Amino acid sequence: MAYIDLKVDEFTELVEKNGTIIIDFWAEWCGPCIQFSPIFEQAAEDNLDITFAKVNTDTEQELSAHFQVQSIPTLIVIKEQIVIFNQAGALDENGLDSLINQVRNIDMDKVREEINSQNE
Image 1 (cartoon, rainbow, N blue to C red):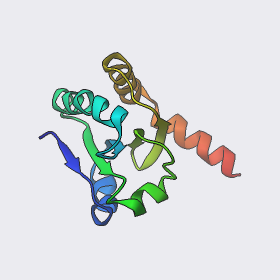
Image 2 (cartoon, rainbow, N blue to C red):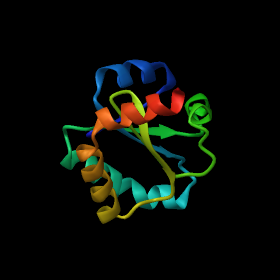
Image 3 (cartoon, rainbow, N blue to C red):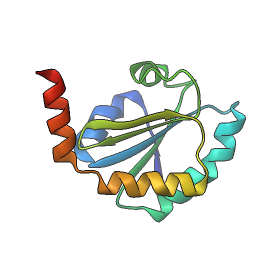
Image 4 (spheres, rainbow, N blue to C red):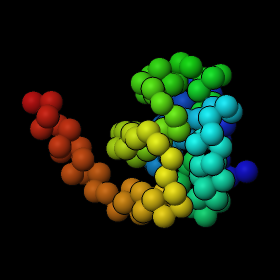
C-alpha cells in the first residue's frame, strides 16, 4: 500500500514531515469514491516522491470538519505546509496526473508572496 490511512492524531506530524501531500476524503458508501479509489491508489504507487493519504469521512469527522469537506470525494493538496488545492469530485486518471504535474511545478515562493500580500 503506497498511501496512508490518515487519522486526526497523525495529521500535524504528517504535514510537518512531508513536502507534498495529496489527501483523498472518501466514505465506504460513496459510489464516486469507490470508482476513484483505484485511480488514487495507482497514482500513489506511481509517485513515491509524494505522500498520498486517505481520510474516511465517517470515522475521521474532525479532519473532515477542519477542511470543511461537504461532498466526497474531495481532494486536498498540501505543499510545504500550505493548502494549494481543495476540490470536490472524482478525477479521472489523466486529471489526477495533470494535477500531480502542476503540483510538482508550482513555485511555492510565489505562493507565499501572494499569501503575504493578501495578509497586508
